[in-house]
Image 1 (tube, rainbow, N blue to C red):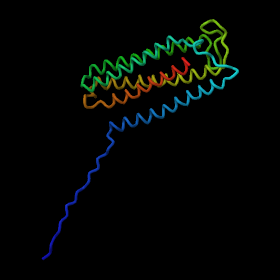
Image 2 (image 1 turned 60 degrees about the horizontal axis):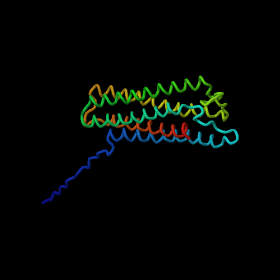
Image 3 (image 1 turned 180 degrees about the vertical axis):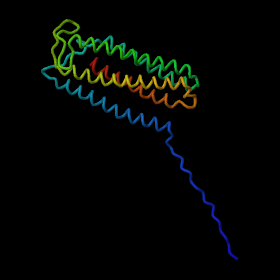
Image 4 (image 1 turned 90 degrees about the vertical axis):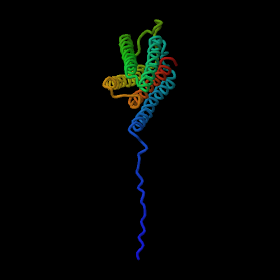
Length: 216
């Protein structure tokens, strides 16, 4: 008599630990880390040029730049971060309408910021702050003396940030359109969270730019 022995084979089913939601967040974090290095390099170069100005000197920012205007721009971006938070909170509660309203306010804040930056650039260029020169007189009417590198570094850093704000506004408009089309619910809203990460990053970077370029 033959004895037949059977074995039960249990197959392990592989379940990926990274879902589309977590992959999206991971991708955004990787992008933000790389972008942080880019801004860090620009600000480090600005600091090195300013420190190395030596005898030539560096232009006091308050002699050329409008601190009150940029302080308002900073406040505007901070408020837009608050509305972004409220947008995410709204969709997590399943309120699509409020999410769209708060996203609209966030977009409006970004557009106003860009408009004010365009006004600032136009005003500064008109009064002589170019890539190769400085205005003859500052806000106080005194003759400006200092390194001509102030203009190029100012436009490079603020312009690079402005491009990020522009990209963020376009990104938010896409998310808002998706919200109108009913793509997001209380359970499915990771795209709103991801765009929020980007927008908070843009706001945080501007606070650093404002401090380094306008205040110090």
